[in-house]
Image 1 (tube, rainbow, N blue to C red):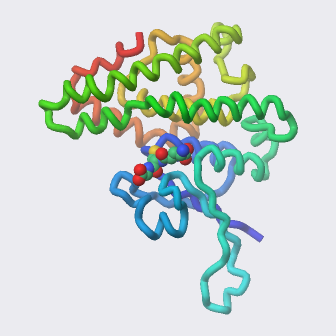
Image 2: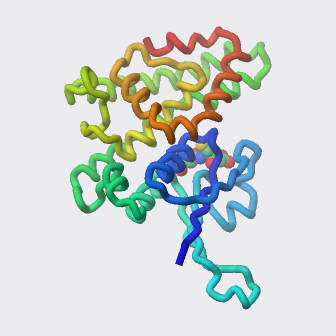
Image 3: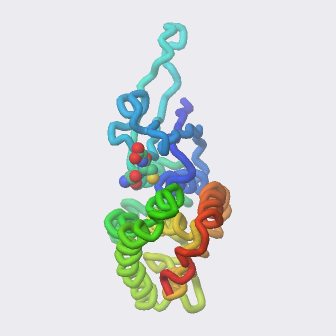
Length: 262
Ligand SMILES: N[C@@H](CCC(=O)N[C@@H](CS)C(=O)NCC(=O)O)C(=O)O
């Protein structure tokens, strides 16, 4: 029986990209359903009442073929799941290619390593994601020019300050591991990245796309660069790079993003 996995997502969203990149890495077939969240589609009843009551992307629906196609109802029960981390965990648990899946998340095979990945993923939501300034910059870009400097002071600087402590933490972590000098760092210290690396780098890539560079955090920069050079990561991130470039070009240089994290 072949199940259909539908991914409700948008490529300008960091957690959506993490989920989609992982599905590709694990060779899980999926149907793509774009939801225009910027125009409120994730809050519309068809989505909020029937797909994800959290009203957020990504979400997946796994549907078995209709057991009674002749009954003409066209309906079959779907397994619905929201939250990018839960989706990634589920994908690793159920992927046919378990060799690949266990490199991203070993599950019961290595409870300690899995617990470390869980720890980083929990931290991701409360730190790196919390201070992602992409939305503030996008608002700024769409706002009247006379408000630019005000928004920069009231919205963007506090986010940059918040992000700095997370970046320092990551840089020290990589330094303690002794990695990052000859080989590329990963959060759990192994050669292969895990779900935690993927979620966090997707988050930070949002602001790389808009022009930020992390010159003061060389190991963090190397980590981002290495994960971002994976072919599936590149393909799924093409749209956010375009969007970031447009915003950067049209916003002028007053943000000085390249030097914000020196
Ligand atoms: N914790 C969630 C965060 C999801 C989230 O914030 N998604 C945003 C897009 S990046 C969204 O769907 N927003 C819809 C809205 O605000 O209407 C996850 O990891 O999946």
